[in-house]
Image (cartoon, rainbow, N blue to C red; front, side):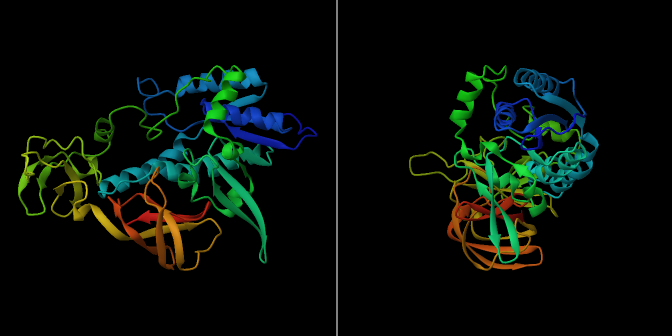
Length: 371
């Protein structure tokens, strides 16, 4: 590895082959950093399948690195990913919950395994193409690093980053936090990056575009059981509680069951509302606003606070799923690694396994796993 030049210092950028991380690398180089690209390979099981884009992503990342003039290397974190992220993913689904592996991937892989590797390369900082910001403030206890929403709230990814701690944030740059996504695309086109028109990746990283149930079937046994209404009427059979999430409307297989009908003869849609693990029963309800789908309080565990300690009880805002508008709430208690939130308005389909993330304005305070 070359000697660190007299610039702003060495930064290792996670380059995924996407537009965001490509523009991130270019921006940092323009700002005077010595940039090294690092392509993370986190999944090995089906590299050659139609759903796995790892090979193309690597080619895109390498092409961009060559164009903007930075070194890049590929590092395989598949073993760490399987141990720290995928094992937890399967455990949660087996227990009937719906986990968010991207949250764990950021905390355990992108800002832990990747950060450690970057430091071994002599880096002072790491950077990613996430839409978020870091702000350092002085407090009586010393310097404090805050995680903030991106200025482009439509692309903000602080929800996925809420488990980052002070040590991780101190070494992290988010160059896109101040830039609208439309401007990032425009910059990529102006630079004639080979991936300027590439679609943003969606869904869970190791599943890609493949059918979710088909993927899960390879790792979890199918355990069919009854689908019931709140009154106990059996209206169908589910394929296994792991395959359904609260609020799910499509794929229930009970489209022909009319149930309660309106005066005009039409019927409300069915939604997944509860899972009873002990009896292996899936409960469904009719209507988007059925009481079983609404909650004005939640409890969360495995809490992680950006500052290192829980905020004081009081009024804040929270998201119970990504892309949700912030909802006014009261932090009622935060003891050990658990906390309780009360909401001014009912929340729809609050889902065990997902993250409840707390905000004070644009500042992300942290969060926990909904129970």
